[in-house]
Structures are given as structure tokens and as C-alpha cells.
Image (cartoon, rainbow, N blue to C red):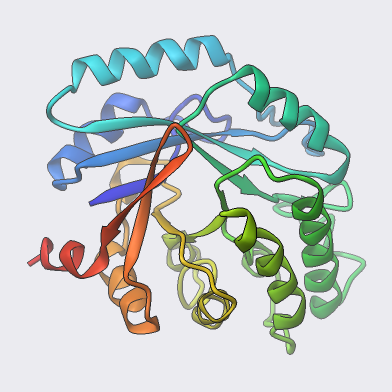
Length: 269
């Protein structure tokens, strides 16, 4: 099994060491993990700085890969937080740095962060979802240097009530933009930990992605502490299989490898 969305203390919102997470992954029987540390340039909440020393990150990963060789494959990833005015900076980052895997996430909208509620306070729930997805669509139209979209419907985590609209029209436009480019989406299992009915995206959006021709799916816990590594993975794989997905992907040097969901489910029993 593989966990493809994990943070360590290189991310500003995480205090967990790589060693602790790696030891937990080995204990759980995982074969591979990918650290996907946060870079959110120009993050609107100035009390937190989502950047880190990339040279130090590279050295630490090489140290961990050597120390745990033969016990766990450890990949070098990044989670970038896109905003329309920052896309050129991420292009520069990708030219200058090599990663195995890149998650493209949107943690802000209209230059405001989601977690404090500043973006939401002047919108109805439906208006907030619409504005969020419109900005994400704009970003994926103009930026292609990533492998999967992270937690596509993250906006729902921060709204106090459910939207009365499923927004499948604009989500389909997002998927039709990324699928021909060979980009995928992740199933982020952290949603249940935050009190949602399921992961991100929700089941209906996973169905929509499949109907649009999407095949590339990664599975990630979005873990910030070692105890949530591989959270709800068996249940999530069973859900993906029920929807009709046959494989989940891992990455090396930005190239996907596909693994049978049926085989992965059987490894839990």
C-alpha cells in the first residue's frame, strides 16, 4: 500500500518528524510513501509561512531513503498552493527543482485564506463554492506543471452548511481541462477526520471524474501526525472499486505507475 499525501515538520503546519511517520508506515505494512510538503507562496495569513529550505529537504529525504532502504520506498513530493497571480513562480520552481510527484491544491480564493473564514464571510455557501471552483478552473487552464489536483472540493470543509448545488458543470470543465493533459486527482481521506461524510472529493465528484474519462487517482491521508498515516485506506479503496476505478497510481520522476485496487484490497485481509 502507498500513502501519497504526507507532511512532516518541513511543512509549517506540522511538527511530526519524518522518522516518526516512516516508522509508522513500516508498522502498517506500507510499501511506499511520498512526502508532499507545503509551498504556498504569498499565503494571505501572515502568521504562518508555507515555505521551507528546499536544499535541506532534499538532503533529509536522501538521508531517509538511505536509512530505510529495503524497508520502505520514500518519494520526494510537493504540495503547491496555487493562486492565479503566482503561476509563473510555480513554473520557475518546477524548472529549478526535481520532484517525483506534485500535488496542485488551492487553499485560498480571491487572495483570502479558507481556514480563518475570511473568504467565506461575504458569500452564501453556494456563492463561495462557485467562486472557489471558478478560480481553480482559471488556474488549471493556465498552469499544467503538476500531477494531480489535491482535495478538489476542499471548500466544503470550511462551510458551516452544505451547498444546494453540486457544481458538476464547473467541475466537469475542470476535469475536461486536466484529463487530456494526463493529470489526475487525489482521493484525500482526511475529510472524515474533519467531520465530513467522506473523503475529498466526495463520491459524486469521483463518479463525475470517472464519467469524464479520468483514470489517474492517487490515495493520500494528508497526514500531519503519524497516527493518521493510511487513514481509512481500505474503505477508500473499496469505494473506488465500487465506482469502477481499477487502479491507483504512484509516481517516480513525475511518471505514474498503476497498481490494481483489487490486489491492494486483498493485501489488507
